[in-house]
Length: 267
Image 1 (cartoon, rainbow, N blue to C red):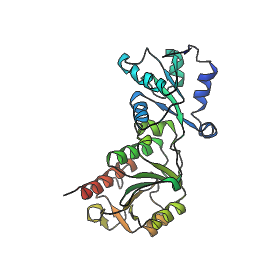
Image 2: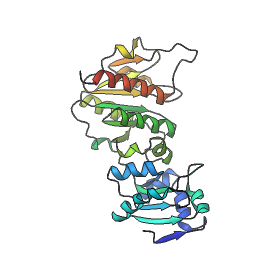
Image 3: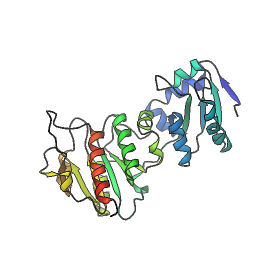
Image 4: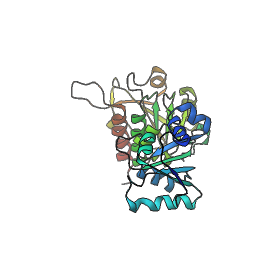
């Protein structure tokens, strides 16, 4: 299974993996990084073929090695890495011994196929990779047809997005585009836009989430801009009873998504 072994953190391949933490390097190479056994397992289940897998056997459960065998059967190179070298390439403070280089996630808006009555989640200007990944994980659980990042500050291939999403970036279609193009895309498909804002008169439980619907949440600091609020079909707010006037954007997205799920359940 293991044909190559790397022991030194100064190895050129180790240095290249560290370089892939930078977006420009990832974009130029057309790849991204997936760290973690569960994340990699989900990627494989979604049909992703890793280009390379780096494992540290000192960190992993021997029962997990079958995953490396499955990848090798697809033609993926499996490389053994020493503990000191693996800590150099790992994002996590306590790595589990798995890191893969995979093809970049496709993010073209034109390639999205969402069906006749989709639930779409839109993240407008969300800055933190952890929030973007958490929203994607919620969207996967809620059965959303797609998640779209508009005017994105971070990219879907950011390893921290993949980590926070638990690998669901490979199971839920994603896209990234400008606000103008996404708003036009929604209008062309007659997808109702439900925008979240603390100033809305309507509670989210009063809104109708049946049919084709897009839920839009805004940036952590500013929320949704006027361009989105003015073009929304419905403005909704989450009831707040404490001193804080808003929720974390990933939490807010989860609350609204599951109100949509509640309404869309059969029966």
